Length: 226
Image (cartoon, rainbow, N blue to C red; front, side, top):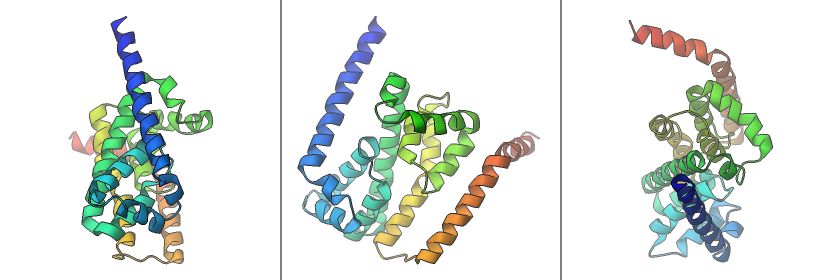
């Protein structure tokens, strides 16, 4: 009975906070500005002198409630604040947001997950996360064509430990965000053909790792246990 009451309270708090966040984003024009880094940059700049705090909040909320790729806001933040301030703020917000959705999914279960993830996506990724677990999550976080935020929610339904999940997020999620910040700050400029080559190389590496990842992991563990 006590556990049920805790779940009800957690549900109420979650609905109130998420609902309030979505309303605030809508009222302040966030969704209209999410179409491009330039418009997003203007949106964040309007929050001065609290622009850094607003940027952190936008990144955090976008992980939890808004279907906006963090790379778009990362590029906008780098344009406004520079490479390293934007990257550190983004990394912190994305890590915290990932931990929150993972914890909520674990505490509230499938009913919570179903509010954010379609049955089609659940069927597509949940079995992979359960079977391949670390290798799949690490590679999915590294490559930009996977729905990272959705995978964090689904991971909460598996038996992966919270510490292990957080370690994967800390290690694997920052790199795509760093590239986005480098592009936004004009530190790095990648032509379309370069992006295509990187995408193909990433896809090939991912497919090979998915096919042979278990064998490589077993071989590495055998060597470490000697």
